[in-house]
Image (cartoon, rainbow, N blue to C red):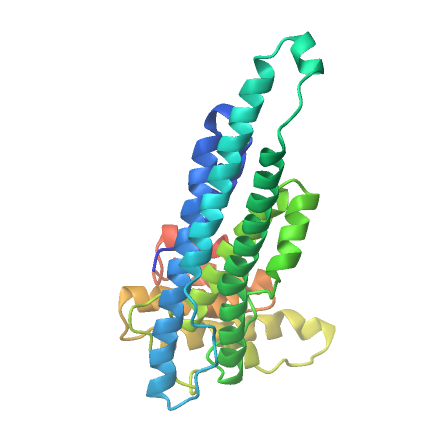
Length: 288
């Protein structure tokens, strides 16, 4: 499983709108989709093993290979890009008088229509396979208490394509950014970031620590007690685990805390007590 940093999407977005570097932006776009599809497959395979080990029924997920739609989408984009380049060069080479008499043949119109339909169908199906399938698995994981948060938001591929048209492809980058961010956070929480995730329903959830109601003069003491409980729970959970499992567990627990200020204080305490490194601290903090 390869984790993409959201900053890569922002870089690709900027390059995409610089004519001389547009091909780099497109390459990053395709690379990101490729990784998302590979991660989807790995995520489903690893969680299927978890379900089997716990004798749970694995949700019915579409088994069609999203790579087919990805390849068709790439083909449609490449054809459209080449076609636009050729047409623009032809028009640019015409004189003003020739331009007034220029008539576009009928076959390019049919080509544009065909490529547009192919692009719509392939993109919408690709997005559905990436998002809907993992959202469905996420809902099942919530029922089995594997995860506590709905990081992956349900979106429809056809609606996404419509927004792409309206926003002149800006929405594609917007959606890609959040797909990368949401799936990454989910992989850390359900443990599928590890090659052999071990999940049991007996794990203590820091989200279910009871909220104590006290007078206003005792609020600060209550907050300190709650943070101490969360801290102790995390420390107990990461004992006798590997470094990768430790990071995954800390990431899952910290990002599941609703109060982000509280989460940052607990995270800082873990750093101060050398349970995480400075770089790990910065990575987790960026998701809060």
